[in-house]
Length: 309
Image (cartoon, rainbow, N blue to C red):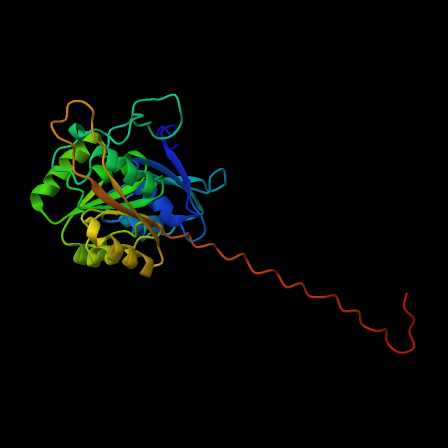
């Protein structure tokens, strides 16, 4: 495609525009099949300037006016387009993946809930508790996940390894430095943002799922008001009933459990138990299209003095 290898590209449809944009945030090469109202200009506005990318736009494919145009997202928003069919969205800062046996993005290592040695920094979760949280967050291609306060970015990084777009948020500069180091170490795409929850979240993409470490009622309410479908959080055991009420007040079905995994070898003392909350909100069911109104056929009576054939 336009002189660029396509076999390692993720192919998505812009019919679900938000999910297509999240795929472009998370993956270095995405072929977006356009849809009405979801073409190069709309992709450019959604990605620029937070997500640096370049576009290859294929217009009128196999038609008399077929053309291939290379543009930046900012330029894509201002120029006219003639029947754009496919937009190849590229992250030129990322090295090409080595060829694999399967089309699409390179497969990650088969393991998940990685050991703590795989990350730099103070974690909010043990690998066993992280495995449980990831199962409840359910990250997948097209999702946006927030990781707030995990300390080492491990939740965001593992979500990115599943193909989701991810943002890691912390208020501390030194923690953000470690977050970026861990992101580089694992070769995934995670946006790192510094600041307080209440002032930063309005500038972040809408999340499908949120992980929140050491949840307070205020922070949990902020996250629950924005999470579309799923949420997981750690919290003091005594605060669980109040926090579950917060989640219920935002339309979530909430659950809680206490986890403790004790290694049988190599651990000087067992880790402290951790209380995990998780919640889900059903996806909105799209309304079926309105039935077309079929106008009944009217038969006019014949004029006076004429017979009906």
